[in-house]
Amino acid sequence: MPRMLDVSEDVRAEIGDEEADRLLAGENAPGSYDCTSCRTPGDSEQERTSTVLFVGEETAVLAFAHATCIPSQVVRVSEEQLQGAVRSITGDAQPPAPAGAPAPAQFPDGAEQAVLGVTSGLVLLDGELHPALVVEPTVPIARPGSAGTGDEFLPLLIEQGFVPVSDLNQKPAGLAGWSVLLAMGQLHAILQPGSAGGSPVAWWQAHQPLQVTEGWRAAANKSHTVLVFAAPVGSIGQQPREDLLRDALEKAAANGRLVAAAMPLAGTS
Image (cartoon, rainbow, N blue to C red; front, side):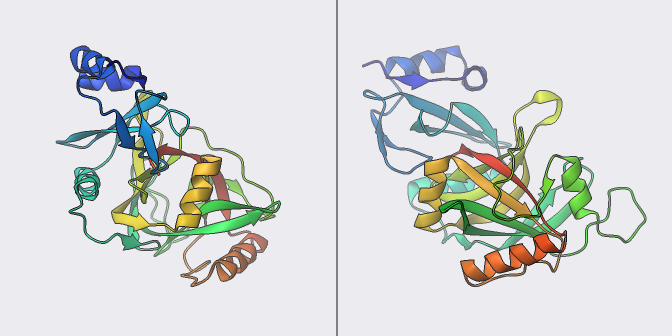
């Protein structure tokens, strides 16, 4: 039976016209599935469904999502990330790492790597809880190619479109081309625009998928947007409670040590 599938031009280019046509005809597409975004059941015979292709160095995995959650797209991730996603699908995954575990990040100009800690939490804005990620390096970040010892983490991000935060009660503006990748209900990466208008690439990737709470995932699925805050090393720290995390964010903002951007969900949640 034909399926109500959305197959983007990027996905079609990766899998080929023949495979795309077979999917649309229902030959290789499941009727029912668990949405890779909201993790609730979907039915491609009854509702519009997006095809999402995760592409690694050697492997590609096709997933399905409600079209109302995310559009059909190609998401490029590392082979390690992709294999972790496959293990979680087959039930052979290791326990996810806790949010806040450090992992490498590629700086936007592609010339520098640093280890970042990423913590998830809920931030209250205008009486509504918003899903947030807090990014903090483990060491000061020098500008790529610079012999200086100053911390350039915030200026580097501001150059990419992040905005300084002075009032934590104001929602940050969206940042074009950047997104937050969740797969199988776990945090996998923060994506930045690819070079020359290509597919998004990972700016930060978790060594292992990071666990987020049910409340965080529910808020992300409701808004389809994640607030990403970033601060220099030593500004936030690992806070055990969300009220303490907010206090640390407010202190960093008051000291001019916080930038932020709103990013859409990519891939899954």
